[in-house]
Image (cartoon, rainbow, N blue to C red; front, side, top):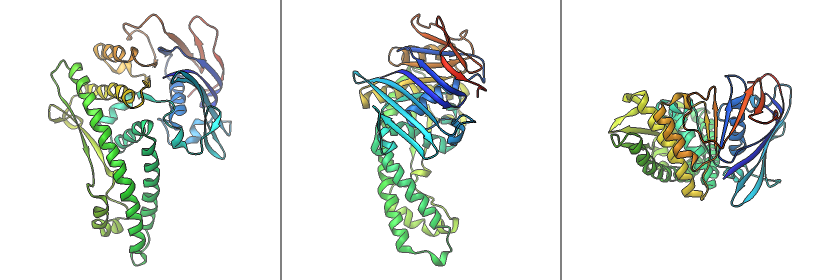
Length: 369
């Protein structure tokens, strides 16, 4: 799978931008706050219809505009496929091959990607919500039914939590039974998909982690499920949930824990160990997506190379460049070693993009973010 090109219209600081990409390696070079990350964010948005940086869609639309659009052409399954995602006052729309998808869940998975950024260390040591979001994004790319179940589960969860806020004497137990049944039906499917995904991810990540640590460390991933029998546990927790006005069990409470040689690496591991675990997981995802879809995903590395020592950089590049189309943002090439000669380098300065050896990219931008 390759991303041939991308076009931005009123995305972040770019009024208009059109870029053609190298099939193997693309580097965006420039100082901070010049617009480099916005390019990777636009690729992420084209793939997943959402940003990895903000939950507020308005932040993606240029400050003086009312709508924006990201489009591009991917090479997949021996053919070129045009994709487009837009935000308008009427909402979010997505197109595949110029045909509108009625449900966004049917669009996601057209362009598979893995993103690795400095904040991905929070996957190891951050809040449980970060790890749940990781599961939702990664599983959703390869299993559309997971997204359908997630939408239905979250809809029922929102309705149940709103209902729990009414006065206790007005609670209708029969209505809660209906909501609990819906939560259990979709929640158990979500948990089953997560179990399957984590089992496969752990198997691949263990091998990679073993290689990265020269056989000195063993990685284990534990899926901490809040309920083994969701319908029964919802009923048992009902009085507590009514008192607290929120649902206390279900996939929205699940978490992941990472162990290295039996030690919880989030609590007791070094920063180097946490980085290695995060790197192992990201590299394992590349192979997992290939196993599930038959296509390697594209890889986005957002200012992450400076966070890794030379050995980890080499491991990352050696593993990825032979398989994936890779996009890197960086402030300098000094710390990038053993780069191939055949690549594209884009200089980014004040939202202007110039490809090495070529004229300025087709762009119109101001006030980079």
